Image (cartoon, one colour):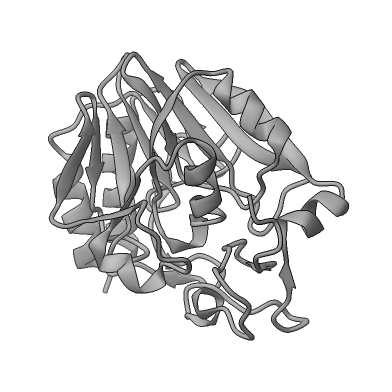
Length: 267
């Protein structure tokens, strides 16, 4: 596992070779750190004392993160299914201990990532677990910082990656912004910050840029809502620890979208 490839300190995305800029951070949906572009590596993160964190986040769902957090602080989720485990979203950090802990939870069969801010060290994670495929929507191909054969670029509105797991191109935040629906149990939606679980966890929201407070376009939110309408789910798992809508998730998304549109379209 190469541990010296550059990782942007602000967004946490690993690149395949040294560079002076991070296009993901220079985009208006993110930002370059106030002290300028800075880089680290997997070795550097380990030397600074970062370690993997693994903890339950819900029925059949295990959170995978870093302590202390790196970059924007998100955690990934491991969805445990009879057909194999699927990792939703991604973190920057990886070491032998974290690999061993995740392997103990069962075979990983796929990775899927909501949007570019969460690409992290996705290629290293894929290789560590047998070159499992990484599903990304083709509309976000330009943001793949480290092209690799493991990356599967899919097109269209939906894509089934297992019998009970369906990717949905909601298109919020990024054109390729995707969420993952799990029909197992009482149903769950894994949303990253495409559909953002907010501090009042009865609600979600929608933004084009979170750090720069740019609201998402109403027609984009309406399209996302129409694509999600056929799916039932009780829980909504956001992109950070404990950011989970625990009950009546589909209704929470619907009423949140209606509230959002009421504000942004008010004349």
